[in-house]
Length: 599
Image (tube, rainbow, N blue to C red; front, side, top):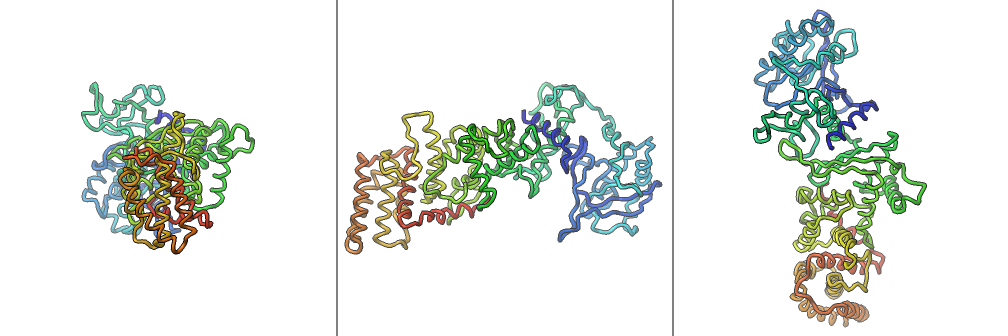
């Protein structure tokens, strides 16, 4: 399913003449120079193809014959292009340049034997006459060329040798001694075609090997069955293997303008849309990217996102829908994680774009808290940072539980319940570092709200302060906030540590052991306030009394769901203190550590 969808997407991209996309048998590689030959095979000049617009010359991306599949440790010459150690036998790093050049020369002389194409004859003549010592004596070369990738061009022509029709005809022919292409039924296309023994490498997944990794790979005897070797265990044609890997590498390209790639925890996520019109597909991809990863600052994109969220809630009744919500648009989402030389599939989802949008809208509705602990909707990576330890007000992405990122993304996109481990981790973090941030409270609320839907007896947590809510955890969280407020009012805001820093973990887990002690201490705080601020003392005493009246005693312990409600009640009651003086955005300052983390 995944490979078939990617292979189909390659066909769609190729038909649309997508820039930078290679034809079958070719790939985009970094090329620095072109060796210009005359018809006799003599070197006429060397063209510097590098991009000189920046501070440092950079190779350009060029469509060249695809690399041979296999490990990087073996000598494996490429066709019609390669590094200088292969093409010219000179290198600044390779200790086996002579062997590499010999392999390159033998491959091409064998492949070009009998050709009548002038350009290919020139290449054969060049390789027969060239010796590595010619490099230092030629005025055309410079030391910067060493180990750069080079191609060939015939003097007087603009195209490269590998693009000539005669070269393309040779590329599909086996050239290795004893080379034999086995045919079979391709699992992707359903046709009998030449099968790929090894699949091209997939590059761009964060944390994977820089040389590339594989989704389909059989490199040990334990992976084989019925005597089948390597790719024969899962027969996929060379054409389909090229198609799905080329499409995936296109989606994974490290390009600032690439809006089809996201990083969520340890998973590199790519997505693409197929619609009746390409413009609708591009609009859907842009909107999906905004829904998954909103910008951190207000602007036109945030305005579009907010408008779209309003439209999604009553989508069927509206005629002014965002262009990204056109009917019939299908979206594909793939999450990949590194696993040594292979790639793990974290999640794979495909559905109508409107259904994905509705689920993401439900996700933001589940997160909703008043007052909101953010100025712009939080991207998923920011939510995941809340599950990491908050050390000195900062969290790091590498501390996010790796499996949790994939499970949470899958739950959001599939519209299913959030993973139980999310609530467990959040409660554990708040008990450990006493950081009851708005982001964490919102996540607790989202987990409990989504869990309550199938079970009418479970009440969904309130969006804003609810003084009539009798859920024990919520009431105890409110009470804890009121006691902390009394302490701050009596002793001032510049305390080294409040009761939250000392007692939050125990109060949320074992209330009966902590709250009687806190209430006795609060009497001292209220006594002090009666002397300096009698009106405030009366108000606090009344609020504390009314909150205690909602309880039927202090429970010995709270289950994990009630501890989540404890955090929500604490957040609501704490924010009510700021709302009275027009400072409801104070929580933004408290949550700044979320933005300081690493995305």
